[in-house]
Length: 288
Image 1 (cartoon, rainbow, N blue to C red):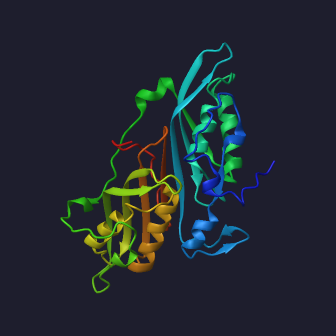
Image 2: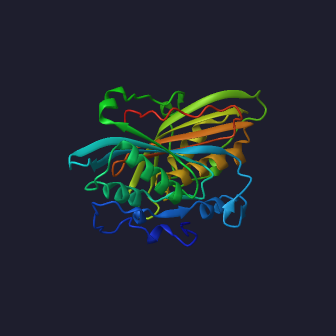
Image 3: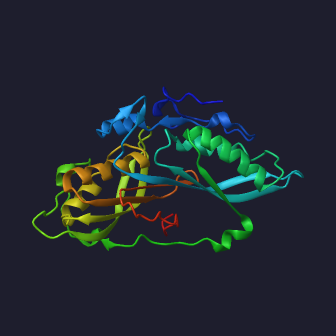
């Protein structure tokens, strides 16, 4: 059955509302939101409700740390979950609905991890509107979990004065009189807010580009400018990508954000136009 999500709006979701947590499997709890409306705000071309000729490709890495179900004898099982949702899926899934959906497995008896994986793969692919990859890490593999900080030159070292706490893309500048460089810049000062509730979302961000040198103080001020901005994680990263492309005109660009978890979930969008780009490894940072 195809899920009709074209009229779904963020304010219609369970965000900011008192929710009755169901404890038995219920895929209808997932609340997809079309990507197209926010992409249209960025000036990207939309046809038949889908953005086309996007200036980037990429992935949204979801990690869930509160996954539990019952085996056939009623004993609780736990695991961690990773979902890889391609950038061109028609929808994102509102994160609280994702949490409610996962919690609905808490008192659900399943034959094993394969049974859980089958349900997750089917339901989440339907919610995102296209196939997604689901990876389950069972308890016995938890000790193998790795951490990795984002690599690059730290923008946060700069002693700057900040005046804007909403995005001001005119702060972005590049010196086109200088030879092109390949550079990776990192900041841990990205903060945005939930589009509906206004709750804070904290992130580290990595910007890798080839092109005229980007003025670093302006870039840091721009990133800090998201501090009072209300948008979902994926939308913030796409806004940053399109603003840098427009104002700095790099030949190649990747933007990758690792957001801290909320409600047992973290969401980590990556957007790039490097044709030879290697997908990030989806490794947690210390703050996650």
